Image (cartoon, rainbow, N blue to C red; front, side):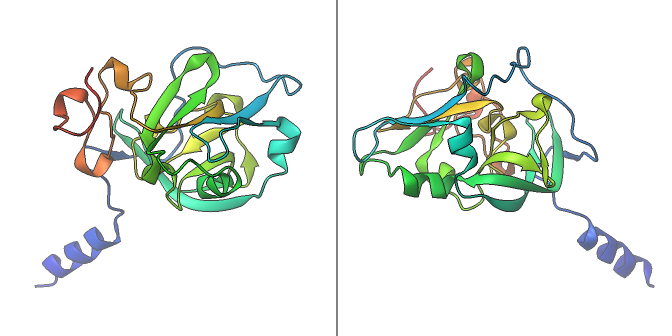
Length: 210
């Protein structure tokens, strides 16, 4: 008599995963290309494109490290089908960056730029989420080089490829433009709860033509 209730209770206690995902206990290293060497004297973070004042804004590594720090507990869903739940990410909230460097009124999207010219696009609303963070730390510790040190973007409600490692800048855009993986067959929006993995799944209006 008690088995169905016990099973329901156990299922309710288990974390909910997006469709097609499996729970990952550790944190696998996944990326395209080599791990870049960090040279603090050469490192620069910039915000450019459709800024409200029309200017490009730049920070050295020391200057960026002095910007407001906050943390968020959020999941990471990789398109390779693993999900890491409940990680604590620390760094600069994206919404704080948008306050420091406001976008122009007609800015609708951002392109996040990383080392080696890697890029990932998203809607301004996705970037402005209160859970999106330019992370320098995980679990209170600095990120390792393999996991994106000195800076990676975490966008918990999108697949992890939308949050590049080794971020160097953010471009505000007045129209959508596909990033590195989006040009190579990945879905332009990347919502894991809708399992938006590949471009052939796109519906009209989901993104620019390939």
